[in-house]
Length: 361
Ligand SMILES: Cc1ncc(COP(=O)(O)O)c(C=O)c1O
Image (cartoon, rainbow, N blue to C red; front, side):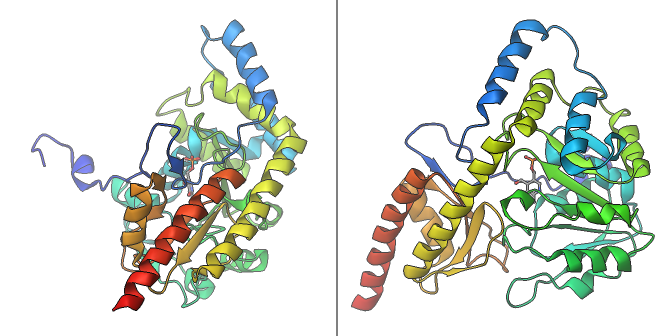
């Protein structure tokens, strides 16, 4: 630690993103990316933008994308805020709605960027243990002093809380903000957007990284009351007016406008996920019920850390979290059918090797 660092830097605990590898030989199932390319319309829009407009700044208030998202979600355009990936929207939200000295609450097993933002912005927090079956302890989220944040479906478990549960959490926290991080909601769970008509303390955060295959362009957004969106704009415009570049804006609009492609790729991923769940179970794994584009899996005999290492040796990346609550589990992103076939071939060999070895003793 350097004496010249600010207090803010000294207290940071930076987030560690999933490992990045280059090369066709790797099967990358560790960061919940979409295995399919973005809609073909995205490529047309990018080409158009590349040839005509790159010398100009993007709009600081991206109206076209806001209008497109407002129409998609049946809200008004001034209820939409767009940021550079939902990580940025989350960071701005921590700054805009949570205050030092007023502890927020979130689940003990959840998206590991939340503690990072809390440390960065000096926000204290209480974590709520999950229940034995890894579902959220809804009632423990009813009372907060400084606000609540949780992903729905949760990450890395993939388990979704039904809308009625989200509604109870929002309703019990009147006067405090409840942020629902819907990064994975498109993979078949209920959105909390309809609650916005009745609750002004709810903020929903979405991303185009997962369901729209645009992780590389960084587009996230928030939907909430106009006052909340104004707060986010105040933060953004005190930080960087142009957080979303022209290519991302063009791609975002084109992606939303291709509803058929979106529906088809989501269905393909859900189908692969359900097949993968069955295969995992046939190999002796416990698999949590997932409403996301990943599965959280545990093998009763093979230590998860070891399995992660052995898969990596075979050029397959999955995610292992070393916290005590999750160290016996692996999070596996749903890849294409071909990637999953190769993954299961390797996994099958490893499970067989391990079970043969243990039965030899
Ligand atoms: C729960 C959750 N929220 C937010 C994000 C961030 O997504 P983005 O790519 O939009 O920054 C992730 C990414 O893994 C996530 O798992």
